[in-house]
Image (tube, rainbow, N blue to C red; front, side, top):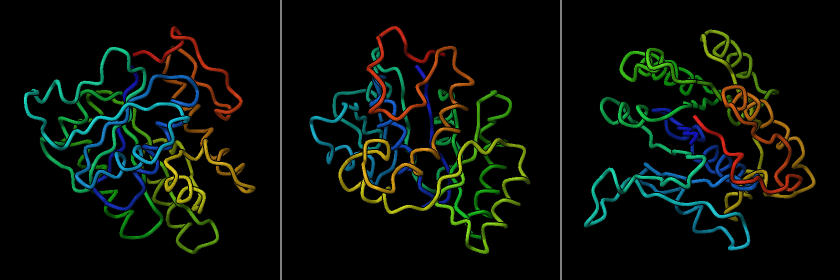
Length: 239
């Protein structure tokens, strides 16, 4: 199973949008996918509730509300059939909660937006990840995602300087686009949504998929999901 965790203590940086887009991408390319929501706001779960039945199925796990009669470990168990687990986390996560989340993950993705406040908060969070979360010592794969970027804005240069100042790979640069909002409102991921301007949005995900693929012994399709035939059960990503 490949476990991917979206995390940043700063709220509003797009963790849910990226988590749902990743989950829908993997589901659309034939992987048995689970989306785990640790956020009390439940945005990922609400997104799943909006999905049409004819879209690829994504298993949902509510990691917030305790279910009677179930142990904590059983409640958040993704099951043997899950091939890709995407974890959406809340803002302000720290300490033991963060350690719990990161202990079992394979990949840590940290979205950051191009505002001074976001960059400062993310810089502090990266330090916390290394110190408290011990990401480096546990040899977790960690990447930065420049999210909702606007290259024409003056703050874009500051963002690039911020990204260059950290010894972490920038695995994607995702531009600000209304297509993400429209897709979310329909319970779709960006790769499932169709509009005249969608091609550029799709292309921006290729570096991230290639980076994920570089750490996997089995290939992850990079093409758009609609162009990919369902994968066989033996072609799952495995760690």
